[in-house]
Length: 121
Figure 1 (cartoon, rainbow, N blue to C red):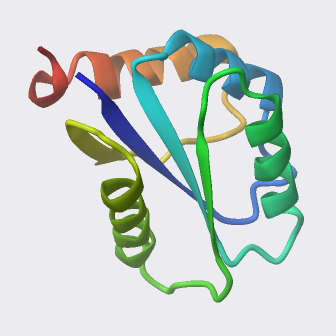
Figure 2 (cartoon, rainbow, N blue to C red):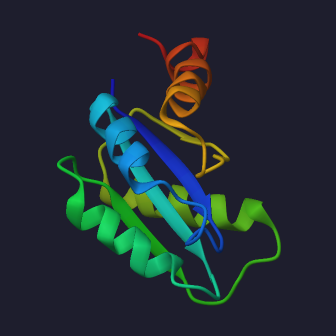
């Protein structure tokens, strides 16, 4: 089972913990992470591109130039991208606090992804 995870991002440059996120990505090898930058006014896109370059696992970074007012539009953009470019069984969006410590971030993914009955084998 291959799961696509959409992570909407807006002005996360100062919040994101790259080391923790790289660890979470490497732990969840059965998932494809798609970070959708929603017209950030800071250097979030540059940070996400760096994350993409440093990740040992393939991830996607999608850039929306003009900020969408509703998060649902950001999620739909991520869904369209993943469905047209990746072979996935499921697609799910999650709202993540990018500043979480590693243990809390890991618990979040355990709860939201791995224990979700819809996405288990």
